[in-house]
Structure formats: C-alpha cells, structure tokens
Image 1 (spheres, helix red, strand yellow):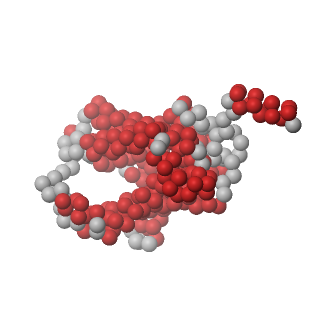
Image 2 (tube, helix red, strand yellow; image 1 turned 180 degrees about the vertical axis):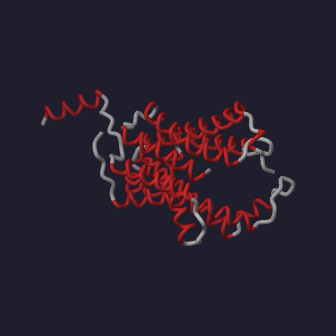
Image 3 (tube, rainbow over the protein chains, first blue to last red; image 1 turned 30 degrees about the vertical axis):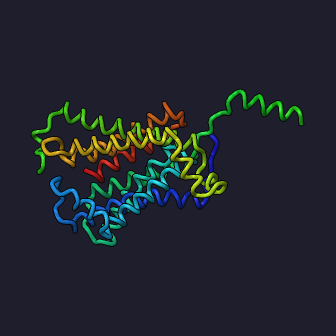
Length: 148
Length: 135
C-alpha cells in the first residue's frame, strides 16, 4: 500500500464531509420543531415544510455532504472516509457545549475522545489502497519500455 | 409514542437492526465501488466540467444500486422506529456503530482495501465512540 498524500483541497473536501452531515441534520431538526404537527392525513404540510428556511438550509447542507462524500470516495478508501463522517458528531458536541452552552455528559466526552483517536489513527495512514496493475497492462508497459 | 425497553424482544429487535446494518453496508460498499470505477471526480471535472462529472456519476449502474440499498436502509430504519417496534435509544447507537465495523469487513472482502491494524483499531474506536455519543 503506497502512502498517498492528500492535497489541501482534498483535506477540505473531507472537512466538508465531516461538517455538512451533522449540521444538515441539526438544521432539519430545528426546522421540524417550527413546523406544525405533520400527519399522513395532511401530506401537503410536509411539502410546505421543505420551503421553510431551516429545512431548506438543512437539505442544501445534506446535498453538499453527499457531493463531497462521493468526491472523497473517488480518491480515497471507504475505510479512510468513514471515520471522517463520524468526526462530524464530535464537532456537533463541541458546538453544543461551547456555542450553545449545553451540558455534555462525561459519557459523550469519552465518545468524542474515542472518535478523535480513531480518526487520528486513520489519518496517519495512506488514503488509498494501490492495487497491482492487471497482467495485460504490465506486459504492455514492459513492451513499451523494451521498444524505448 | 415510546416503546418501553421491557417490551423489546431479542430476536425481532436483532433482525430489524441487522436489516438496517446490512442494507446500509451494502449501500456504502456499492457506492464506494461505483466511485472507484468512475475514477477521480476532481480530474473528471477538470477535464470535462461539472456537468461531465455529474454525467459520469449518473450513468454508473453501481451508483444506483448503492443508492437503492441506502434507501432500503432508510426505510428499514423507519420501520424499526415505528410505534410498538423499537426505541430510538436502541436503534440509533446500535445501527450507527455496528455499521462501521461491517463496512470495514465489507471493504476488505469486496473492495480489496488494505484494512491494516491501524484501520481496524480506528473502526473499533469510532464504533465505541459513536455508541457513547448516540446512547
């Protein structure tokens, strides 16, 4: 497995993966609290909810998450990208403690610590598994080298 | 309506959580396989623009298979959270944390990723961490 160094742009995309999903979920939760009770008898109220500012922002953030997640998967392993998605939960805990001044239990701080250590482990390693080229390709490369 | 923990039976609960985990892992692995088959999206976008990158993703059958399984996982989650089924406090931490481990196993078997001791340790640590956060 060759060591794949990520560019600052790729780290920024992983940052978007971490931040967009939990922030999007938070926006959806805040938006749904402002919407009147939704029931299957009145499905139109759910469609109207999509156009409220918090829910629209939440949907935009979740679209941003999916786009950055797909981009990250195109140049990094799944087992490299997944811890980044979990890292977002820790960001939400930090925001709820220091920005919203909510109480965060010791159990949650332990969870944050474990996720941070886990992400640190993965981030130290290579981002992509290098698979050996198929034999036909190797033969073609060798032939090209021989002609040169 | 909340479900009291005393009314949750082991096998139905395990079956519903297993369905969520399997569908979610299948979706993640198929999506990752799709993106690997497409290639670096940054390079495709530099070569043929944003529309080219979107076209490359939307014309990949594996991507739609992955999204279908992710949708199935979402509906399995909704089913598990229906009244008289399972409490959120059980479903959310169990499915979120165990999915990380099944994804690591699936990535090693199906995507042939080199899941070394560092990645196994990370999967287990993040799994326990997510359980603590969600529980």
